[in-house]
Length: 145
Length: 145
DNA sequence: GGGGAAGATGAAAATGATATTCAAACAAAA
DNA sequence: TTTTGTTTGAATATCATTTTCATCTTCCCC
Image (spheres, rainbow over the protein chains, first blue to last red):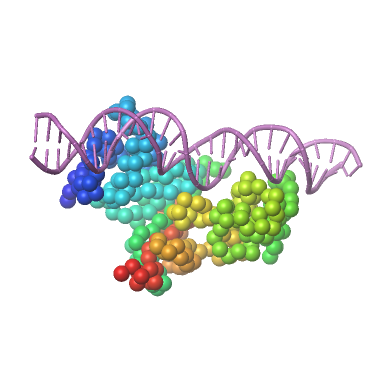
């Protein structure tokens, strides 16, 4: 299996785009993290390694990384789009505590299968899906009282 | 069961907020629709009935209607938040054609049950969820070739 | 290994959705 | 009715993201 760096380089070459130090740095920074970073947070991290980098480059590169399939946008309903590395990772959904923000990755084959079936029943070809479960985790429930 | 208008009036009274003609007009306009309106679209419709209404009032009222449980925000990944009336409606999810925008409401008890189970397995109390299936509808698939 | 065209970059300005400010108008409780 | 706190519309601000533009860089060909 190709490394994410290779995948990205190939993707760029395919489109006659260029591999630059900035693009490499942004990808590397993303891969080092297993958090779900917002563009703002990523920009801060990247800036520590290269003082001269610009926000626009971060946004531009995130767009490319998304198109190349290396990362995926997440929507935790907090106003910013976050991203997570997705290359070589199994697909999963998210279970989010609305109180403390805790975030658990979940995967359920029963649900995945039913999604396919549902789409097919309506004549759709399923391309992707988003599922977010919002609730309150055990700890927060205890703290609440 | 109380009418949406009553629910809204009670909600406002509870919070020491006021029932105004603008708020009534916005709610009525929303209820007449069974489309998924963006604030912009709603503003246009409302403006036809009351030339003097402002955008800000539409945004402010949508926020209140959401808090009162009468409407629900939807995320079709097209950059705008859309809303649908949800009072007295059974919960459902959405199956969206990424090509033509067609939007089918779906409900599946197998999935709903598994969601509850999954949350419980992680010690969570499930409060709500979002599930969007994105794909291509039969018609668009044919057109494509 | 340099020359040049196509792309990429950073800074600043533009955009687009949504939120806030403010002075004037209004709803509702007394 | 008077009063008080709320709401309104218009304009302005905000916030995330995108675009513009002049300058720099990559990479392909000789």
